[in-house]
Image (cartoon, rainbow, N blue to C red; front, side):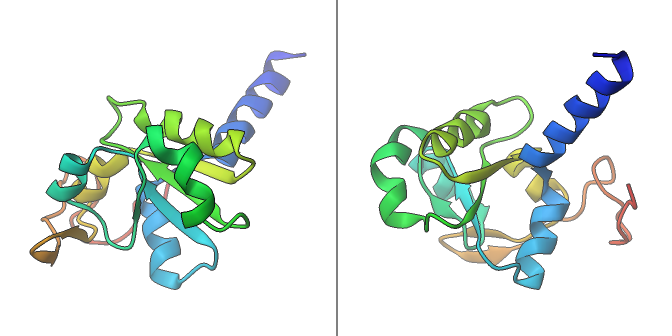
Amino acid sequence: MSDNAAALAHFAARLAFETDVSDVAADLATGVPGVVVVDSRSRESWDQGHIEGAVHLPTAEIAARAPGLVPREAQVVTYCWGPGCNGATRAALEFAKLGYRVKEMIGGFEYWAREGFPVETASGVTRRPVDALTAPVSGIACAC
């Protein structure tokens, strides 16, 4: 396989199995059918804040509980804390073992919150100011 062919295969595969916070937010905002966002973190982490409408399903519980919580035809999107954590990768692997279509949300909850998307806690839904190091503060897409 040539270097170019290997690069094409590599990047196409990444896009097939990864998504970012902006794309997930857009899918949720426009009501793309069948998207189920799964937070694979601990109860304590979930309670600190999570994506509004996400399903809380820690990785260790996916095999036992996913079939009763997540429709088989869903497009599952897993997330964990952030780029320094591979918990979303582990969760995605568990869903793949069960035969689900699954993507990992790169950036995780950290970038979700830093980009100013809604965060749900026991107190309700809030938004944090956009971090200029992660997204345009104007709210206009980065167009990447």
